[in-house]
Length: 158
Length: 433
Image 1 (cartoon, rainbow over the protein chains, first blue to last red):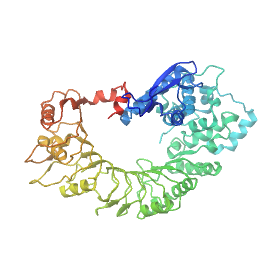
Image 2 (image 1 turned 90 degrees about the vertical axis):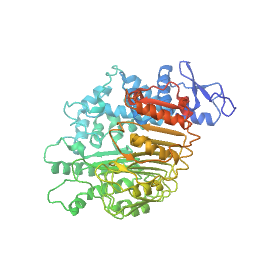
Image 3 (image 1 turned 45 degrees about the vertical axis):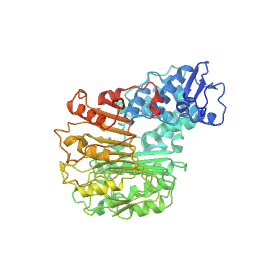
Image 4 (image 1 turned 30 degrees about the vertical axis):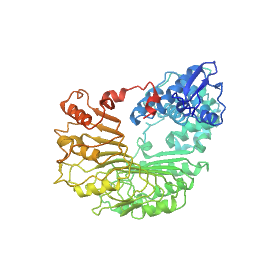
């Protein structure tokens, strides 16, 4: 693995190892979008690669797609377009995997983006619709639920 | 501010939720399995009323809303409610006051308020001030809760908000303030300086400034957009800490830049289509920006003819990146050449062509000498509409640049469509610029 400041023409890279043992060699400038990885590089513990036991290869590939694009710091409009397409995902499981990865790797922009997407899935929906979308089990007793609705009548429709 | 439809009906979801992922398999409830700080972050993007309603989803959700460190209060959430506009406003106020009372005293990161003040026929400034009282309390509350970022806007098509400047006078942790359609009474900047001692970022959109001087010792980024200097007397701007300045307020006479000693980046638009901006004022404005390293300059005024070699462009000795529109190409590239002659250390030139400079005549003058020396100019990007790549004017432009020592390898012509669909394969190549 090349190290920075050695006078090489090739920029410094770091190897990321997914939970299913896929190896990704990534330029440091891209990998350091993750504060977690940035700290590890600064602390000098990236020799031999960085194991990421909480992230599968499939998800890590997507995370790196995000990091590659954002590290290039291109035009703001272009980044917006990219972000919109990035979270246009068909299955919820992938979206939540990305949220968890963004949290674990501490990638602020990606965390905000995926969290905003979850919020957008809640917006405009009734309580019942939200439960259905996310499989939230209603564990209130009917009396409990009625009480909460009464307590918070000021926020619900008259 | 987004406007969710009435949540308790089978209404269509708001525009941003147009993609609805398939329902998760029957066992998984991924959302409840999120770490609580992550779940809180996700719901912090919801508007206040929708946020409170999550309390009924399940036991786990019961009190989540109370600790969310961001508040999005939008009067538009009450647009669908029964009653007149004024009655809806009353409902919003009652709701929001209650919301603030019942919230936990967790420090606030961000406070976003979109509020409405009715434009009545009988309007005096005093009415608007009275009607903006609630906004004063809410903003004050947010600042007392340590909000770092505050955005306040008045709903479109209604009157502007008229808050009391004293709201900003007590010590707070505010670092970023964005105001839209808010009147800034005299004393605003003095109060801001007294209380918001950590303020680094200020963005104003359609906010009439009543102070004669805009001053700050802490701001690093300042943007004024649309109608912020409505008064006849020329205002002045003195912000010695400012690094990034955006000016597209569209006045005939731009403000006087008296002290922008730390300025590095300026994105400015001078002139307005309706009135002539005197060349001397343009000259003075540019002089105020002459230390920057990055300049994006657009001229929006009517046709302007420069008389007899008037030196309107100062020396930009630190300028390394310059972005100009097609206005600089009129009259045989007049303004472009003047800039190049005054930017000896230029490294990157971007020309954004949207209209035909021959039919949209703007900045016109004559030059005795048409040559320039920019030893370090190694990147020239010309962005134009599709099918213009073979336009004779563009060919002349390239010839002219090459004739002044720019290698044709360093000149790239792109069109707008390609620019927006470009996929970068090797990000490092870009980083090397």
